[in-house]
Image (cartoon, rainbow, N blue to C red):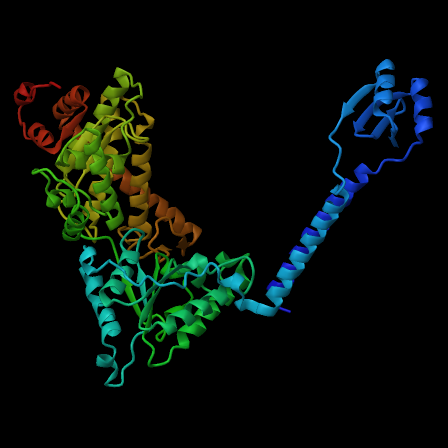
Length: 602
């Protein structure tokens, strides 16, 4: 007998036991000791009866000793008048129908029969019964409307997958010289980069059936269910080849065997993975069935899945660059009404790191912003407001902030901005605001001139100095610190730590990586240490040295621009928000008189 069948039978037996226990407890509650009617009348006349529960002619009697009995009254009206004369507590219940004693055992028998029938059906059907297949989406999407025209911003991945479409349309072109068609394509990348959309585009371009399942659809509590679903899916796909099987989030079922993360459902997960491996090996050379899988955790996949002959090709789909973002914005804005001042190029430059899904959300939020204002078209200001909401959180308009807190926040943000403007390696300031958003009291937003894929030591030091600019400004003006610099200090410490321990940017410790991160696309992965306690102390000293040096240089920069700091904070207090052009005007002033002539008005 299979393990999963035994588990089902065990569960069924437990359910039947509990049902029987409830049933017999109920019956026991209803069975009271009988009492002769004449004895009951005698006790009633002697005042020994304290309570009577009447259900038709049946009486449940409680005496003064709290003993309970059951008797039958031939004349209810006579008994009722005697009870009232003796001040006995009387309660009534609706009499049970004549078939009640038969119906309850019948329900119990039906429950037992149903459980027995289900177990027998599973025993006869084995792991391939209809129960196992219910969740398998073995009906393909015959008319996928998505094509490569709907996918933008990832030209390298698109070019690599165009050949997959050729495999499906004209397989003989590639097999005539003795080659074989790749069986699997693994799309790997961060969430929201378009992996699922790319798979649908391949099916739409090729015009073939598209079978879609999620990795979690295979994993169930009963061992063997997932494996049967894999077999059912591949069996149906082979009948309709050429076709595509798409498995989203394959890491849910393809996690490396024996890994700690598979505890609890390890037997089921491993059986499902084994079935998947066997089915991928079972394709004949003439079958044109291509498996496309998507994951953002390729580092946890079983090596057997990634070997040649299974997932032959691994395509990285990463966040788009500035040109890609511009094209993605254009795709998502096709059905929207845009104002004349909307420039996708400008928006793309101010959204570094945005994925395709985030850009789609940006355009949708912009449309909602414009609709709330009853506009006829989406303007650039709507896109800017939507971007601020996504990146920094919604404005906390109901938050009460004192004048002193606003002034401290203004100096804090002005400190960030001035340091960023003075450092040539730092990203230029795009906007400063002291309007509370999310958990922040104010924000200084910087936008890079171009996408960065590698960071120099000078750029990282400039980033640390910019982060420390707010706290340094507070110290210079108030000789005091606030909790507003909490996140700045955390980010600065993280950058300094990675400079020393991960990127080898320490003169004292040399070019060596002391920690190694996992290879996944998700943030917050585990770090592996590879150093002694003595080295840990040296690392701490180097981190402190970097932060202290940056702090001292930041202090020198701001001390030389005190007039600009006061003017920028003054304008922030009045206007609440300053854009890049206004910051440039203030920073270009060389004389104090020029600064004083800059108007301060809302």
